[in-house]
Every structure is written in structure tokens, then in C-alpha cells.
Length: 202
Image (cartoon, rainbow, N blue to C red; front, top):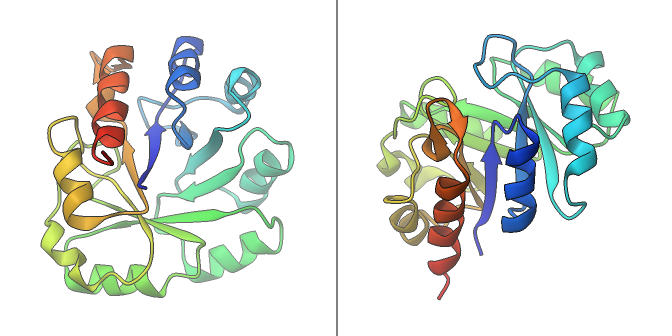
């Protein structure tokens, strides 16, 4: 069954909704330029409210490896998602500091981008379009060449996620802007999205 990641949570009410819906993953965005940015202190407060069955993923863009490892070591996040142009050398360096799972995000514009994702040494890859959280869909035909489990992101919403799962069978689906209203997470949209995913199994 395809797993669910609800990304960009930033308020206690977002966590409350997630605890009720029980996605496998939620995301905290630590990229300072993002409108969904949370500080490490805020993330720590939110993590304390999160149901222990839900994994918290920290989303980073070219962050200092020691900072990422520290958040993992302190239990503020359970996994790290690298959403910049982090290299294989960066991943290798981070692995010397932590044994927690790593997700590497890739912008998919060409078949070569898919091949690069296939070769990544990260534990998981996330396939996205353009800038993360942009709400746009990339050409899913390019994914014919992907040969590893992946998180599918980029423009997913309640209307297209079911067809995405039926067509692509991704390891997980990742959504952020598609569950927002006026820049904030919308509990009704979160609920509808999770229902659309879980109903595709029936």
C-alpha cells in the first residue's frame, strides 16, 4: 500500500489533524526561505505532540551536515530529506554523523534526472517538479525508467492522487500546497487527501 507524507506542518492544530489521520510521515521544513519554515525549537515542540507511530521528516536545503545530524540525534526528527543540490559526497559525510534514514529529492525534467535518482545512495528518493511545494505536476511518463521505491511529489491533490497511485504505484505520496488554504494547512483538505489515498486500496 502506498504510504502518505503530509509535508510542511507548522502548527499544533496541524499535528492534531495528522494524529487523527495517521499518515506514515509528516514533514517539518527547515529551509529558511520557505513560507513553511519552522525553527528547531518549534519543531521540537510539535514533535512532542506527534503520535509515536508517525515519522517526522526534516526537510533541508544545503544545510550544514552537523545541524541535520544534531536534529536527528536529539529526536526532533526521525529522517532527513535533502531538497537542495546536495552531492553524493554530502550524503557520505552525513552518514558518518548519523545512521538515520535519508531521503534525497530530485527535480524531474528529463530521463537523465530519473537515472540520477536511480543511482543515489540515499535510502529513499523523492521525485518532484521544480521547487518543492510549488504545486505543479511533472511528466509522469518519465518514471517508466525508475527502478527503486520513491516518494512521489509535485502537484498532487485529492483529484489526481488516486490515478497517480493506480498508474505509478509509488512507495509514498508527498503533499504540501495541495492541502493548504491561504498558505496554511487545511484540516478538511488533509482529511480528504488521506481518504483519497486509502480508498484507492479498496
